[in-house]
Amino acid sequence: MKRRSFLRDLAMEKVLNGGAEAADRLEARAAAALNAENWDMARQLLRWRLEMRCPLDPKDRATIDRLFQLMDEAEAKGIGGTAYCSAARDQHR
Image (cartoon, rainbow, N blue to C red; front, side, top):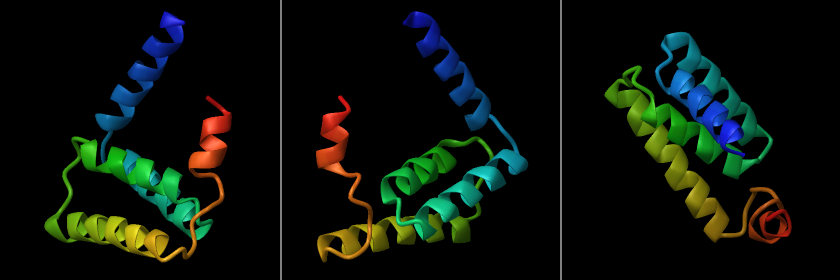
């Protein structure tokens, strides 16, 4: 079990220390998740992008913050998102 955790941590460190190409891949995956209305995945990918050492310009940071806000507002209104939220997530624990 510790080996899996170590490998996961090593992979995350590599992603978070990645350069512009890694940032572009994360952003593309987040965009695909948004288009598929998989907002949980999109949120996670965007959080990782914010944690990356590769700097964001203020405009990109504002865009990510706005995406978080729009997803929260839509979910509060019952719009979009996926059924794979709390109920399905609790089944897999």
